[in-house]
Image (cartoon, rainbow, N blue to C red; front, side, top):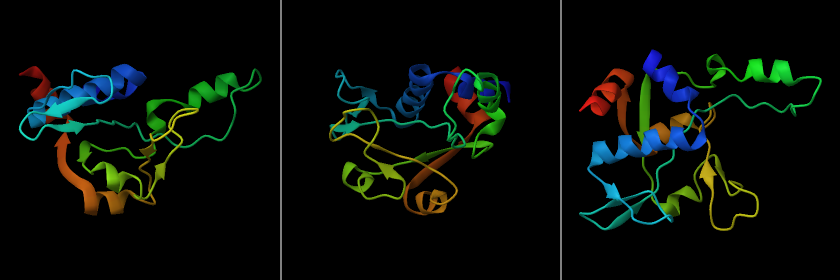
Length: 147
């Protein structure tokens, strides 16, 4: 639990780096050598983009001076929207992402041609059925990183 909770306590880039290392080790991918994508499958020359998600509960409240303490307290790990004893790995090609449930083209302000999809209670069954390729528990993940 300490290892799992530590992963989810990492912030943005460091959190994503954990996912990239996991995928690299699981699939024997190489570094991309480019800032345009994360990893490369040297067998197929395929570009690999890795996304990792905390799946936090949505919070519509804006952080303001009068609610900053309550907003910070609400942001703890116990408030993850989808707690799991396992890490689930999904795969889809770039054409599938554009039409998958939960897709949003609003990843960054002013971005063009870049997006992401969000897992939630409404679409998780779809993603598990159509795109899940692996489940790994946190002990197995810890062991993978220990090698």
